[in-house]
Image 1: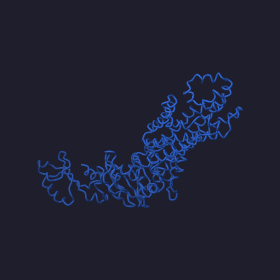
Image 2: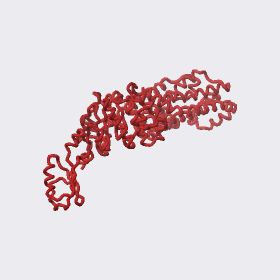
Image 3: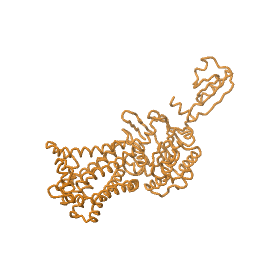
Image 4: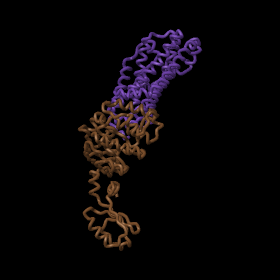
Length: 272
Length: 285
């Protein structure tokens, strides 16, 4: 890794990361502060979800609350952690990754980097490291916002071990998306195309996860979806346990996509 | 460069390109658009890889040892693309962190010579100022090899002169300069040797002085009366315009040709050394 490229990339992204963190922190605090209201609504709140088809409800997360009552973690999973923040953080990741390599090639600034005494592997890893730092900051902002606001509002939360574990799973999940998006970024010369490929990866994964729930014949499709391995946030938060296989899948995706991205970047011509 | 061949798909970049540059010289690299100049530079910098052939720089392999070589290289591309949201000073200070700072040139002095103010955002600079910034970043670490692709495009004449002076001073201190340009006047002025590239191949590598001394003389004759049609057909006539006839004459044939011309009434005659541009054009006609 090149520290020069790492710090320069941090400098050029710190404002974007701060804005994202600020937005997600405030939204997480807002949702946390809304939880007592949802809890007070009792069955009026859960009735809404009973009317939704079970497959869709299952996809939305927070499935335990219909039988076991609305917990704070179930509410968070349903309203925030299962869908909204995945979209928000993925948008940041895909935007960042597409700019990291394809954007530099498109803009022509890659020539400046390639003419410095650094390897292409160092360029790739330095940018990837900033992406990981950004993800850690976003995950930290969301979970920090939730725990802080829960503390301020005297909301009882599950044991903290579950929260730590979920932070780890979320970081691995998002870094997997980052590594794949970075790999796409090394393949093309236009930022827009890299962004499209990253978006397609997330959308197709998402679609396969939904289809797998809709029809028994398609249920094995979910093995191909990265969302299967993300699991159900409320289950991780409350039980503080996760299938080891899921973690290994994330690690596998990260390693394979990173190695492939570096190999492609090193082998390709960059005619700038 | 040794037998380098590079095709972009079916499009020829360079083909069996071979030449060498001596340490400490200013080497001009001439050719029209599409001749393969930029491809050769991209290959030197390992931006692209050849189908065959190899490049050695300071005893290193340009592909395998690229980062080690780049430590000693300064590079200015034909159209420098810089980060628009950085300030000039920010870019320069950042790029300084990639190399050892011992022996580097004074940034303030370079900015003064090239009349450049680095405190503004790059997006606000004119193309000339961006070129100056690109030159400063390439020069500031006192490279052993300076690769310049059309470096003076967009510079005003005064800055060009200052830039030539910097190049001469770097040359004195041992820097090798690879200078690709369309401006043949400046190449003639500052380069020790030149290579002419045509259709991806080098067609001539010569010292500038030697190239010019070996080339045909340019003879412009204005006759009082135009000689009869067909009377000068054995001479190499490049242009006829009224009474004016332009000839290219080999140096060993000049006396014989003058004797031939003297058979006709002459109003005016000039004999000139060809410029590098004239020589260059003869390769492309």
